[in-house]
Length: 224
Length: 224
Image 1: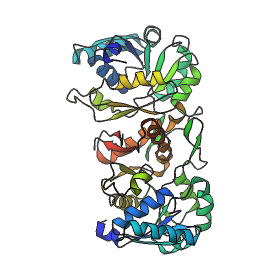
Image 2: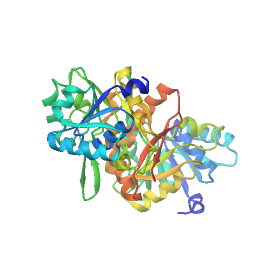
Image 3: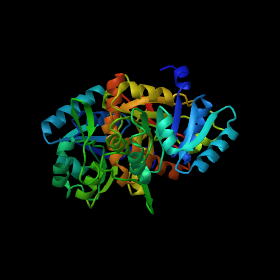
């Protein structure tokens, strides 16, 4: 997949008004893709899109209801909070039929002892998406890339790899190429969807590291 | 904890005749620690220790039954295969009382689709160790460092961080310092023991990466 081919794609972000969604929307917009930020609330979607355009005037970013994002975009990133994940995907399953769906949701919670991974009946958020979207191709990616760094205009390149998991080689290849549109990032195949749980849950460890070091930690794969 | 203080310690490896145990024994021996390689079979323990001494003549490495390792070493690394983990720790619980126990076991299996993380009733191998060893201090570490690289005499430094997890700060500090005796390695606090499962399971993803790239993958934490 060439970057040029990717730039002709339209990418949508479900729950794109949260930190992770806005951060990815901004970087994909800067890379030249046409980006639709989705929200349950169409006014909020348009307001966030306008803010992102203001900070990156060359970027093509619009705001739409989540349902329109699912219908109009070939490649859809799921960036909703974990507690709305199943409900949203169940609602949009028909509209997401035939789409490449990239799940970046981390099922986590926080208590007085810090972050903790939540158990997921299907194994992982990505496997839950695959179960709810039998007519879509589901890939898991973008779990560890810091929203703070994605949104920071002073940060040109991000020192982080994106692990890309899935059972369809052409889909994971396409998402690896998508990840590499973010300067500094390598997209690395990280295994099948059945090994997504620990990649999602590892975000709890990165948050524990952030707390100890006042950092925005990511990971790199070494030895390749 | 200064490296000098560490070098005065005696470190033992339960199941130290497997690849991970031999690899860690070799590197700790090269760093100047007094190392005991443990096995159920005392002759096998002594034979592996002799092989390690032959490849690193300056290293102080002996071979002992697992029970003697637990009794004689202050710091004990658990490097047995997952299917013998609970049985061995239950047997040695009394002898491990008061010890710092470092669990590096990855509960994994393999089938025709590749590696896969196994569910663990206690959450993780490290939490199982903590449950079986109420009078020991349990830390999880050394899951991602490649045994092939640890054992390779042509590899001087290993490009990999070791995530160290635990609930006792002085214990995790001590294991971070231990990890940093391996040239190239940084020991990084990776969170509480309740977040160990995903660190153990991530080894399945690294094995999937190894298979794709014919590599010995590790990870580095970025952004610190």
